Amino acid sequence: MNCTYHNVAEIRDDGTDYFFGAINLDWKKAWFEYDGTVQLGIDASKVKIGNPDENGRVTITVPPAQVLGQPDANEDSFSDVWYDKGWLANITTLDQSKAYEAAQANMRETAENDQTLMNTARERAKTMLGQYVTKVGEKLGQSYEVVFVDAE
Image (cartoon, rainbow, N blue to C red; front, top):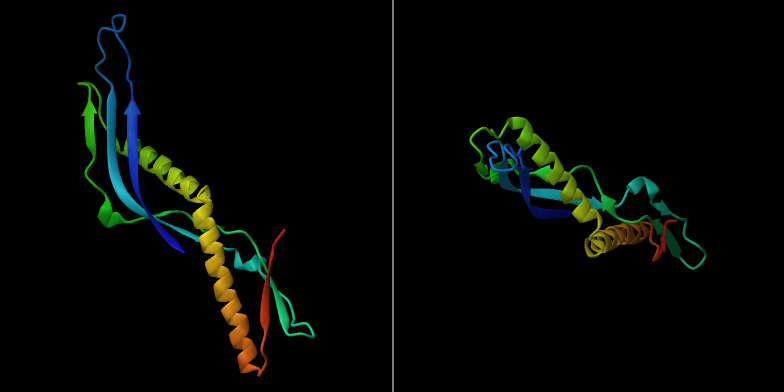
């Protein structure tokens, strides 16, 4: 399941106060916005599909959903960098890169902590697995009942 987020990457440096805090010429703050996609799903290597029992019941063990891979930024969605800074400050490429990395990590963490999304991704995976087992049964001339079990 793909989830799209609108993200803001922020650069903030309070600079250095000179002359007992009266002057600060190297402060900076900046931000840019973009859209990113986070892919949620289950680790298929942890799925276990049992053999049908005498009643045609097939048990499928399904792990919890998780973020799969790293968030993917939509390059076409990046805004210009908006900034405000002191006379001696520059917004560098390194500043932008660090802000982007922090924003990506935040996007991933936000998705990981959204239990509603995680549950939805897991339920979609269960639906697909159940349909797969049912269709295989039909091809074999069998009628299977699917039972889901949480992976430990």
